[in-house]
Image (tube, rainbow, N blue to C red; front, side, top):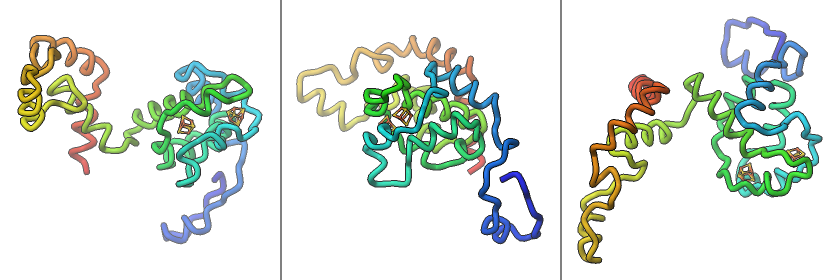
Length: 192
Ligand code: SF4
Ligand code: SF4
């Protein structure tokens, strides 16, 4: 982590990476930001492991919510935000239901995902969803097959949402534009 040796060989550098933790790896601002965004007291975690024991993603992957809690407490920003497992939480809230410290680990994950997005680290599905909401107001928009099925059921072809009232799209786009979400989604997807 802290000590970097220059072997002029990325493969070798990855293999021989210093895996010890040093105080300089600890970003206090990261711990603070995670608490602010999540609104939960992650620094009270005492690593009992109840969260990981509750997690449906843990038995079938290397995702460990307890480790992410430790990273939040120790301020291990890079390690948390660049870990692909960050996106394996289903947000089922089982860990939050059971934490003996009344912490909401789920919200810690949500905060970390927000911070990762700010650095452009985000799975493409989220970006595609931003584009769909921007163009239709729906993350899962209607399509012709569903329109035919709705007709058969005696329903209007489109539900009483932005599909039927597209005049409300301006307001939705304003919110998304305020946070530059569509701009960012387009930019990241175009760089792939
Ligand atoms: S259940 Fe709560 S206290 Fe226990 S490790 Fe998870 S977050 Fe920490
Ligand atoms: S909310 Fe996420 S981290 Fe918590 S138990 Fe469910 S999948 Fe696991």
